[in-house]
Length: 77
Image 1 (cartoon, rainbow, N blue to C red):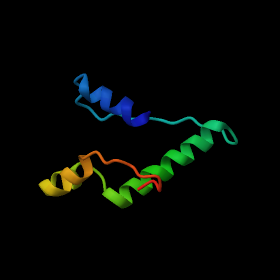
Image 2: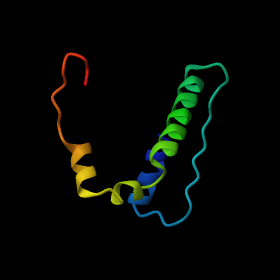
Image 3: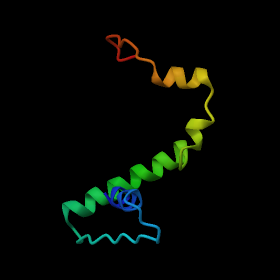
């Protein structure tokens, strides 16, 4: 949600730095959700990196492979 708020501010024409503050209480559902989100971001950054350069550096064949639809078999492949 923090990224969405920051992105929205820039889309509406904000030119100055935007600061987003998280207020999370200890021992709450929100704390657990925040921890999961941070872990997922770390995993995504380690796999594909940040930004969009990983996508623009792919070959046409790699893009085709990622975007093509496949029929799943009973084994899940």
